[in-house]
Length: 237
Image (cartoon, rainbow, N blue to C red; front, top):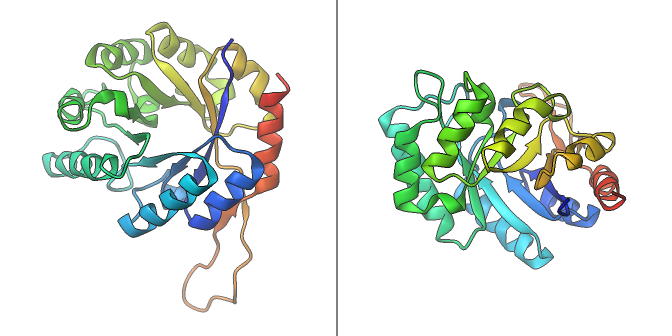
C-alpha cells in the first residue's frame, strides 16, 4: 500500500497558509465552495500559487466555469481548455476539471481538446465522474481517453460510502483521489483501497468582521487543527 497524501481545498491565500500549518501535502484551489467549487480569478490564483510554492505545497486549480451540471456548451468547453492552457503555463502540477456528455458519460470531445492543449497527464478528472450514469463504463472510457487521475467519491454522498465505485475506478487503472465528507476516522478504510490521496475541505466557520445589513457575510476558512487531525490519521497508518 503506497503512502496516501492529504489534499486540502483552499479558496484564499490565508487558507493556503492554514493548510500548510496543518501539514497538508497538496492543495486544490477553487472559489465558491457552496456550489461545489468554481474557478477563481487569475490574480488570486497567482498569489495563492506563490504562497504554496513558498510553503513547499503541490498546487492544483479547479477549472469549472459555472455552477450547475457538467454538460457544457461549445463555448464553455473552449473556456475550460483556454483556462487549462493559461494555468499550466504558470507551472502548476495539474488542473482539475471534467465534463459529461448528454448521455451521462465522460465528455470525450472535451478530453480530446484538453489532451491536445495540455496533455491529459496534467488533468485530474473531477467529481463529474460521480454523476456519470454508469461508473464502470465511465471509468474505462476515461482510461481509454488517456486520463490518469480522478477525484471521486465513488458516486456516493461521502467517499467512505462509495467503496464500490472507487474500486471500479481503481480496477480501470486510474489513480484515485478520494473526496467528499472525509473525516480522520475514514482514512484507514480508504487507504486500504489504495487511493492516492484523501481530499477534504477541513473547514470551520469564519467570524465576520462586522454584522451584515444587505449581504450574507457567512463564510468558511481552512482550520489547521482539522488539517493536522487528517494528516495524523494518514501518518498513523
